Image 1: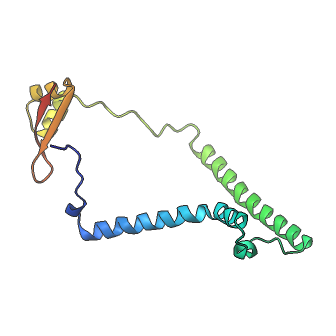
Image 2: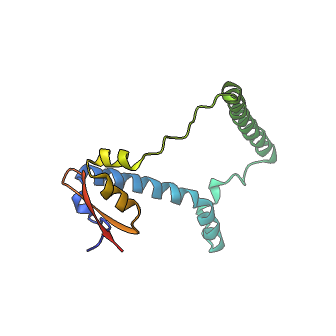
Length: 146
């Protein structure tokens, strides 16, 4: 018996379509990120159709203007991020917003699962535990294997 759930047919059709769309989107982004390398490889093999996507044919003055424009945009965006980080640092520098959670005791876990505490304690000290659930996902028991 395999303990890994590997039956995509059990998921709903909208969920499968949704995850298929997400997968397609990220494969598209991945291919887009590789486009400069793909273009370089195409040039090496003599395919020059993608040559026009780069700005090699422009005059030097136009290139200088674009470099200044792009540098200005990057500086403004970077500066705004640094300013935002500074403001957030000033707002929260002495505020401790996070606290360690209270550890759950064996009795808390047993009460949550509605099972005997001795049984839950045995599971915690076992090396291999296979959980059993009902059709609603509620824990109904476990098998301890050594």
